[in-house]
Image (cartoon, rainbow, N blue to C red; front, top):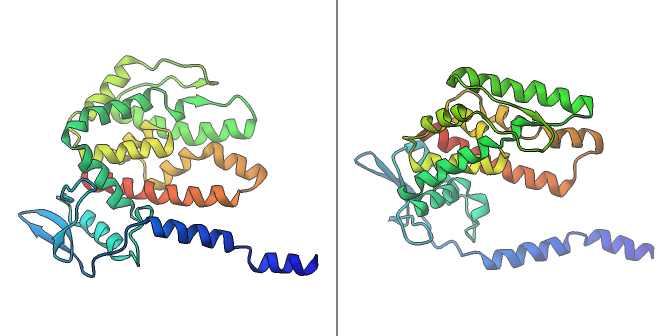
Length: 257
């Protein structure tokens, strides 16, 4: 039995290794050797072997921001034998935006406001006291900044029953997004999905909060549970991956909104 256990520990990552190998085989192979950024009349594009990088349906991936193009160039250059989209958050986000196109803009804004009207920051716990105090300290700070900046009010509630937010508040928040370009709008929707909050996305867009403040606010409940029970390894790995995607979305908002 001891020999069996020693052998099991020696090969404990064998299953993971097989999974990684199988996953690698499902990914497209890296076909390019050169990665560059080219500029034409203020439009920047990543080129792979001198050809402009394309979205999955063949649309050219271009941006008006040199820094964003540089982020994408770095992600393409960092690929090894295969192209792994999970390690390319800026490229994936731009692919999504370009595939949706300008016509997706109104639906993206609708999604942000839908989140804001039932926002994470507005639904509070009644117990335990430590969690209640943490939610009040972190979430109220964000709500106050947004309320003062836009001249709006919110109605937080305790529990999970729906609480209608003032129509004037939602209308004013929507108006601030009316001229938003579809690329940063896509990034804001990514933030809402990753955090459960449209208000955090709006706060980031208007530079009322920074990325760390938004991430902390989004994880008040989760961090409280971790303080009680510790952190699960798999959950921690998923959170790290979500943070990469979040940071990429914040970069796009910061550069283009």
